[in-house]
Amino acid sequence: MADQEVSSIMAQPLPPALCFTPISPPSPPPVDRETQRAADLRFAAKLSEKVSLFNQQADRHIKKQELNPFSAANSRSGSRSPRPTFSKDEYGKPPPGSESEYRAIKGRISMNKDILELCEILNQEGELQIVDGTPVKVMCFRDVFQMYTVINDKVVGLLLRARKQGLVDFEGETLFQRRDDHVLIGLIKPIEEIREIFRKRFEDFKEEERRNKEAAASHVLQVPNY
Image 1 (cartoon, rainbow, N blue to C red):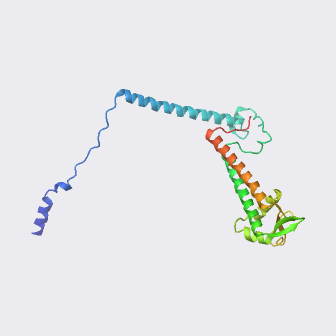
Image 2: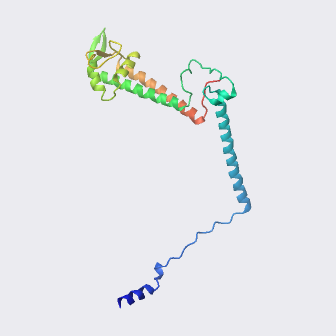
Image 3: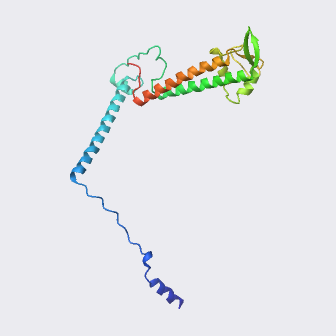
C-alpha cells in the first residue's frame, strides 16, 4: 500500500512554482554596415600604431646593442664602440629620470635623516662642556653605542660621516666597541645650525626628486652622448 502511494505521488506533475523555463539571452541590437566598418578601421589603426611603436623600440635596441662592446651584435657589426663623453658633473651618476637615480636620492635622504637623528641624541643626552671657549655636548662612545644601536646598527659609519661633514669630532680613525668605550664624542656645532643645514639639504633632495619624476614621466632619459 505504501509503495502505491509513493508511486502515485511521484507521478504527479510539479507545481508551477518549481517548473523552470530556460531564458534565452537577449539578441544584440542590429549594427549597420557603416558602423561596423568604422569600428574595424579604428581597431586596425590602433593595431598599426602598436606595431609601429614596437618596431621603433626594436630599432633603438638594435642600435644600442651595436654600440655595446659586450654584445654579440657589436662583434657582428664590426664597428668600434665610440668612447662616451661625460661632463665633470655627469661622471659616475645615473641618467636623470632613471630608477637608479631615484634610489640614490632616497638613499641620501635616509642617510641624512639618520645623521640628523644621531646629532639630536648627542644634543639631548650629551654633557655640556666648554672646549676652547666653545660649549660642546659630549658623550662617551659606550653610551652612544648602547643608546643608538637600538635605533640604527650603523652607528660607527654614521659617526664617521658626521665627522667628515664637520658636525662631530672624536679621536682615532675609527671606533671599536669595548676598545674605544672611553673615547669622547663631541657635537661641535650648535644643534640649531645643524638643523638648518639639514633643512636646506632636504629641500635640495626634494627638488632632485621632483626633477627625477618629471624626467621619468616624459620618458626622455638624458643618456651620455656617443
